[in-house]
Image 1: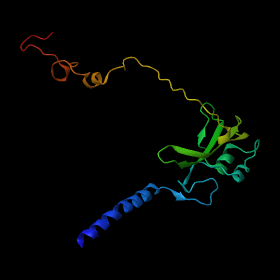
Image 2: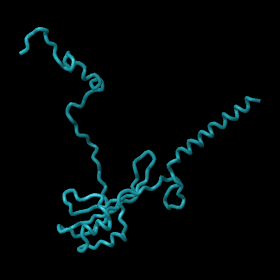
Image 3: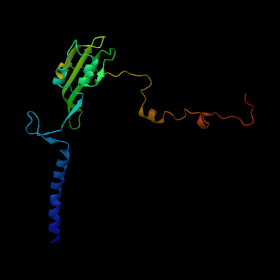
Length: 179
């Protein structure tokens, strides 16, 4: 009577392990049936950066608003121009984690506000993900001299390089006058 019970329990074990592994695999996902174009299980969207609302941006008037007005309306910028402090950048993006891969950028917005030398807004520029250019990455490697050693040379390369004494000191004859 005891043996059939043990046999039934061992048959249920693979099914329970399979259900547990499926539950763990979908732990970071959310159910999104109402979002068009989204799969059944998607990771949550993450807002990153300093998103600028169009209503807030409408408060800034080129030729009238100053740096202080822009900072009061939008806050401090995400970045300023590298070589010219006359440009403020407000950057934001919406990302989603892809399992086993890097973040997927779904939307990216950059608002660039250009100032005159007097500190008055000259121009407001909006740049999105669709305005970006695809950059071809070159896969060449620049060789550096001296790095073409075998694994054995790397492992045993320092043997015999130090002087025979402790800490690299050479042996001296005891009682010999020093110069």
